[in-house]
Amino acid sequence: MLQWHSPLNFECGACGFMLYLNVAAAVAVIIECRGKILFGVRKNEPGRGMLDLPGGFVDAGESADECARREVQEETGIVLGHLRFLSSFPNTYLYRDVLYNTLDIILVSTPDEVSTARAGDDLADLVWIHGDAVDYDRIAFPSLRKAVRLFLASRP
Image (cartoon, rainbow, N blue to C red; front, side, top):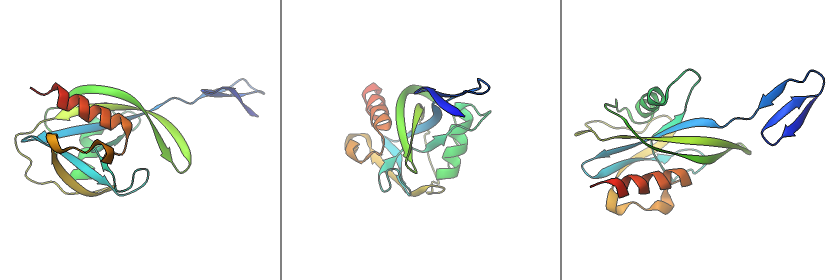
């Protein structure tokens, strides 16, 4: 019989097995080209209709870079070049009435040109927004609002 040992894990009273409830790793990519940032419009809850950065949850055995490249290609069709780390932020993700704790890893890509981009996977649309025109209240998650603010403040 599983019992809560602490808010972070379950313990089996019969055998002593402990199940830890660790955070899920997620990656988001700020893609900036010619002063504009690429946002996706979320197709599903949470945050349906709101802005999101391309990205998603890291699969087992996958690095943050690998996840970023896979998710961005699935969601936008863009094959990423150079990536750099910006920051990471804790977040929560409510999915089907379960609140997951996540660690959102933010990477940046600044290609000179993006010739083709199309919304795919769980995005309804893609929009390029100039850095000066970002409406932070339209961004679905607090961690991504912080990331975009940090990115824009760090530009020369």
